[in-house]
Length: 331
Image 1 (cartoon, rainbow, N blue to C red):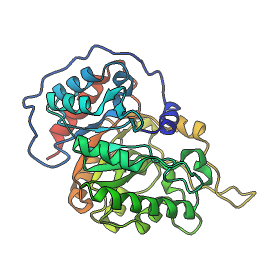
Image 2: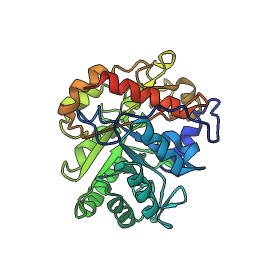
Image 3: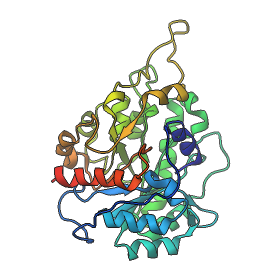
């Protein structure tokens, strides 16, 4: 996960309780891979538990597995040291194996690589090496260049697409697919009815670049997941299952026009985050039961619970609540 995304999401924090809290866990019936759909066999994006990971990664993985999750999506790889949260890749691999966890996908910082104005690019080869060592099938870019968020235009997204294609060609040799994860800003229109996600989908090669659709963010942007599945079948093999607090469900007005200039307003992140609040899967306003019927059309292969901020002190109880809902309601 990029530092810039971490800083951005920190704006949404509302009374987070740091530190390692005592989990109230119920052991799962089976530690092996579950049968059923990718939704039934749900994973966890570890960014959800970032506060706990910074203190005791081993305990986090043990607890996640005990709840019943069978795979996790990583974030926070340091290509210079070859570590995650201070843990060497080989040690992480062993810890995952010891807890019967797999990792099929990871978020890797590509902010400079995707920035056409940056000459200091991330080491894609090192990311591929790390992902390959972990047995991952996807390397996901979690955000665009965040420092120029309000300046991104169509040509910027075209450049990002070209870069993802190039990285996809490199990673394909290792059996890994490059991918991109959306937030809400990719749906800000350029004035011609086209937005950033549309450009990325149009200018990336289907066999080189996949997309991870975040159900919270596309809904908050006022767009329809179903419409993207129908327009681009097979291009969304990864989903983030993230729910929205019912009291904060009004879509963002990201395409409003300034009457004085005739241009679309810039995004005020501090103001935007006041209208955002997350909740456990099944507790909010997103209709996941309806969305699951589009799994095949989207090409869904892996799905992950993610909650950018957990407001209760027991974070393990929170991710267990999401897990239990998935097990009860997904086929």
